[in-house]
Amino acid sequence: MTPRCGPRVRIAVVTTDLPLIIDKPLNDYSMIDFCIKCKKCAEICPGDAIMLGDMEEIDGIKRWQINQEACFTIWCIFGTDCGRCMSVCPFSHPDNLLHNVVRGGIRNSSLFRKLALKLDDAIYGRKPEPAKLPKWMKLVWKKKI
Ligand code: SF4
Ligand code: SF4
Image: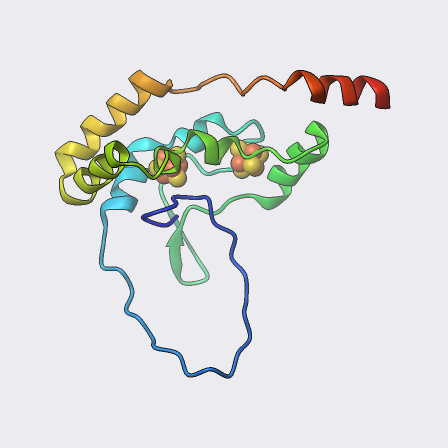
């Protein structure tokens, strides 16, 4: 999870001998507090691959661990990737003025976090239906069968 892109990140390694400036860890509890209240990703996951309960200490760090095998099983069943956890996450909303104002409120107020979650549920739904396949994709699938 990242403050700007939410869960829409892929972690990668870049090897370089360039001198780098080391930044400091973010001292910001607001995202963890929001996740504790939210759990939309865990509720919608078709493979129950995301922990619903409290964080657990794994390798010395408290975290919600994703069960990669359960997640990949769903990808194999669907025949493509899933990503429902990312699409429902309130931090995945577009980078525009309205959502950035909400993000600011989430960062600064516990009360606002509760309100923002209620608003998100009301506007986008707690468990929205998956997006419908575009027509062209259905045609490609039919041809394959
Ligand atoms: S990608 Fe799909 S199956 Fe995997 S963790 Fe996210 S919601 Fe669950
Ligand atoms: S949907 Fe996003 S904000 Fe909600 S618990 Fe999951 S990662 Fe956290």
